[in-house]
Amino acid sequence: MKNYKLGLLTSTICLLIAILLLTVSFAAPYTNAYEDTDITNISEMVFQFDSQEVKNVYDLNRVKVVINGNPKYVLTHRTDIGRLLEDLGVIIDKNKKIVSTSDEIVDGTVVRVITVGTVIEELNIDIPFNTKEENTKEIPFGKRETVQEGVLGVRTKNIRKIYEDGRLVSEVVLSDEITREPVSEIIQVGVLRYSPDDLDVRYGYNCEHWYSVVDNGPYSDQEKQFLKFLMYCESGCNAESDKHDVYKGLFQWNPKSWNAYYPKDNIYDGYAQIENTIDKIRRGVSLSAYWPACYKQYVQKFGEFIR
Image 1 (cartoon, helix red, strand yellow):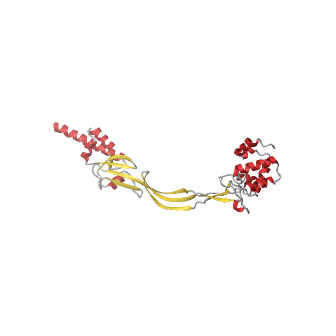
Image 2 (cartoon, rainbow, N blue to C red):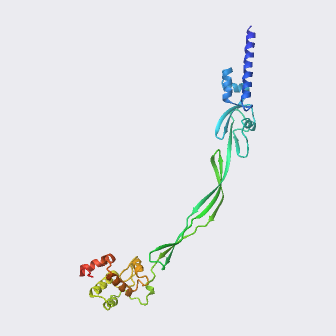
Image 3 (cartoon, rainbow, N blue to C red):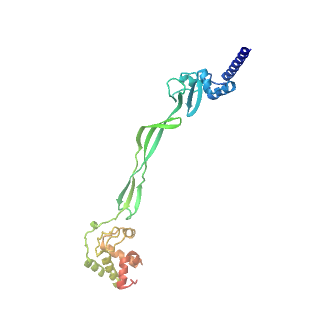
């Protein structure tokens, strides 16, 4: 009786296993690879065994397969990695790289399916342009004019970038060349139209000469007094005075103002400076604005200049 019951139980268990395995074979898309969850469910339903016991019973290898960074575990009787990947529906082509911890599938093998992408990237890099300054007498002193706009050059690099599963792993410079030369920016800077070398006669520090020019000129006594005091205070009676970074000549004019009002006259010409200075005085120019330090000294010695 016991043998009859044992045989009946064994038959029943075998029948259940056959039915469940048949069901799984129809439901699973791949016949030769099984996910852990499928096997575990079967063992729990029939035997209450764990997946390790099922693996041992059916002589299956537990393999970790990582596809595009996503891992999954399968139980399989395959030993060939390619056949296993076919079972899993993985299409192997030139864009796939297979990396495995073993040449053939054994228990614990890890297989990685890496999608490889190659991109040729063109990179354009700006090349800065130079700025050149050219002195010219054709524009007012100190004025700056851009006569040629600068243009950036371009350096073009072609780079091959290799990606694995979307992650950059390497890059190689295929070419590197200048595809457009930079164009220099050219700025003209106004300089003095004349220099002491343009004078026929140079007098240097010569108060006697310039005092006589003033005394013999058509000026009032107050104008003569002011002109002589001012030329001595500003330049020491040196019409060719060029020591100051900005101010020049007998009365130390600012070249910008001089060029604006008297562009045809040499700023180092003492005769021109006397004539043009008395012209500005008679036009009502602010003496304290043009010659602040020396006019202050003049006022202290002679009082205000009365027009």
